[in-house]
Length: 119
Image 1 (cartoon, rainbow, N blue to C red):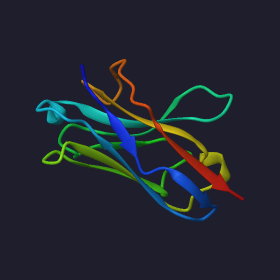
Image 2 (image 1 turned 90 degrees about the vertical axis):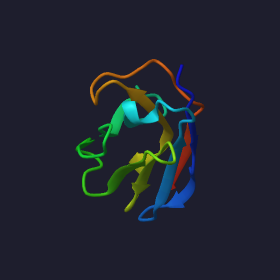
Image 3 (image 1 turned 45 degrees about the vertical axis):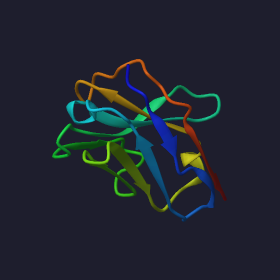
């Protein structure tokens, strides 16, 4: 089982920035692709960014391209999501997840971290 602990959310005005972190304790972190998902109120959870095991490949949803940056530090077992130029539609609970590839995710979810962007 993969343990995932998200942090860094908060309340920010539109145009502001936040940096989310996801810690995944354990020696197996580097064997997984990592992704950030978000769930807005009344909507399904969606993948917003993903990064390969080595960090050499990334994926971004169209809605966040150019504004969000995913990165990882395998030495610290941590994946990050830098969010700039935030918009009210970015509001939601953000979760990280791990998987064998960038389009195949495990069914382990942390508690998530709330991001609220005010207009």
